[in-house]
Image (cartoon, rainbow, N blue to C red; front, side, top):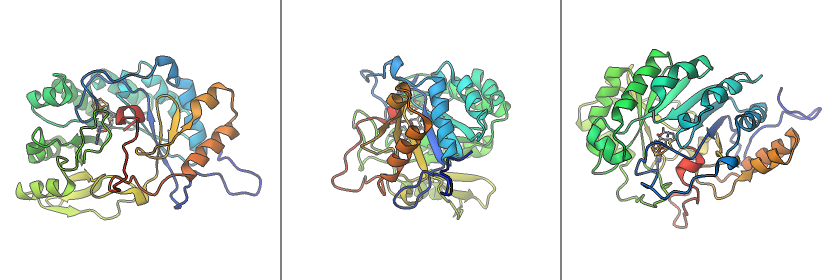
Length: 338
Ligand SMILES: C[S@@+](CC[C@H](N)C(=O)[O-])C[C@H]1O[C@@H](n2cnc3c(N)ncnc32)[C@H](O)[C@@H]1O
Ligand code: SF4
């Protein structure tokens, strides 16, 4: 099923540094029902016109071609992927592909209470649910919506539907929720959830990120150690963004995605498809390939393949946040797909 020219090795998504890409993040929409302050402004963000968003059929075609080029994992994201009315259909289409990838979703969890079962039935394997605080007041301050209960109900529904393991993503904001490091870990351990702290990255359209206020990996480790957790690093992280630690000898674990202070670009195997059909080699890329125009102009699979391979071939070595000339990409996280 892989794309081959007679006598040649199968075409693959390999860059100049020999990194082979196997993990595709697909943004289903740039819109969201929360307004996490590190991700979106309260109002005024221009949404993609609906007609510009890829249809379920177009997404499935790009994913099919990607699987023929070696993609084995697909994660649906956004914006909030579960606000897309056809999300269950999209999962069912992708899991029915001949080279069906391992399918997961990253979600804020608000709609999981009703969708966890149908998503599981459609072939979804796992979910990552974002939850930055256990305080309803802090949740409302951080997301500008009073909906912590819906997230917790979503986590319960994911568990009841058999979506496992459930990973929880947490972004810390100084002076907002950074005092909750230990209580979040205790909660996750009690609930059997796999929690990962993610360093805040400069991807918000308000340009509110600053290195000085970002809560770093080493601060998180310090807080955990001061709270009495014994952490031992688990070797063999491979291309996984989270560095994992056994807690108190295991089997419980906690993860840290130190995207800024401990980047994992050298092992990166991720590529992204935006909701409007652009193929991006990196969250921080300044260029991307317009697959939507190709799709709508009737391009054949060979043309899609050539464009997808070409974009990956040109991937930069790293995100360059430490470079004095670093420039934030013009698309925010919500429009790229986190
Ligand atoms: C962009 S969201 C999209 C999926 C879904 N709406 C959610 O919140 O899980 C994916 C992940 O990116 C994280 N995120 C958003 N903006 C971020 C930033 N500036 N730095 C680091 N992580 C960020 C979110 O916390 C979430 O875990
Ligand atoms: S992080 Fe996710 S839930 Fe929060 S505003 Fe961004 S897209 Fe929405």
